[in-house]
Length: 469
Image (cartoon, rainbow, N blue to C red; front, side, top):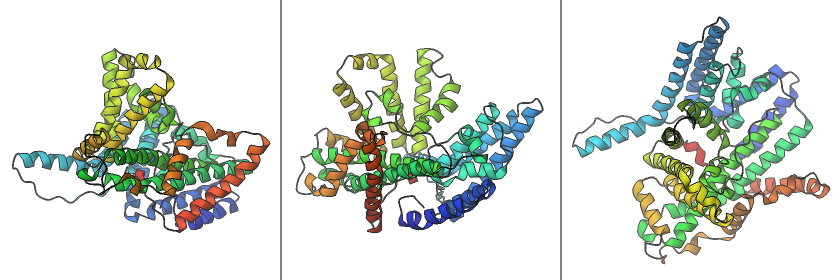
């Protein structure tokens, strides 16, 4: 189940809200949230629910073991390592087995060595996110940044909480540990959470979904049918699609968190206004960036060693960041591509950029990001190289097979303009405390909800990119 569906908006969510607030006791509300989260996860993939429950139980026991060992003066290192190995093994098997097997088969095929057929492994929903949640919990307990959770149901609620279970944001256990046991519910939080949820829903349905259709159509074109204008339109649409697909889902999660008394961290901060790739990663997918920084980059040494050591650490982090996003060499290249520009900017490119006018710095950043999205979106290197060639103008001009205007209509044009506008802080005036803004905001929220609901009810195109991760 995803948020941007009629089933969730008009059945699951209203029933959950009524049951949640109808019960006066915190323990009962926690149980409603836990049960609702398990139903939410099992709705589309009930066969993977036992895997999620086993993961919760093992991480609970490992956290408990580490905590008790530390209370007795030990470190619990062996238990901690066992827990980390379990989580990484789970992620490696389900997410990367097919990728590894395919790579081995490809190599052996070139050597004329045949391998027996092996059944493909199905990727469980949200495994990248709930595995990272579990790892961060164990690391923080081991580092004594938070106490181990003695209540199994509280830890289960942290890992399975349906607002963030499928696509984040990645929330540290220490961030909401207290809220799992004691949190405040106010009308102001419900109002603010509802407004943020509706904003995220509109970003997903009205912008991301609207530009997703031409993006998918253009990326599915044969190389000979792809011209320069169509290629740039396609990657522009995809750049807005992936941003508002994920940003919208994150806002919906943050809004639902506020409604239920939780405070989730902000996940995006206008990344498309960045003036460098370094700044882009200080604004894009903040919870993931901080996770890699705190649990990988800093333990590797961060920037505390030599310049070469720092560059090595950046490449390792972005290699794994690319691999985390998808089990494909195109994702690895995407990660290393961004890592390379971070290194180049540290070497001296950043100083060169600071001497340029802001429009040039912004143009540089947007072009680098969009070229990277080509590798992120394409299914193969061959497709990516053909697409980049079309963007560079080396392919035949747009022709009658796929004229660029055939992908455009009023909805797409409106979504493109709205996407570019909302990618900047220009609409922050609606969050100002002045009287006109206070009056206008509820009206805008109601209109956005009605438009989004109407679009969903009519069965409009409604893909969700981060399901594949």
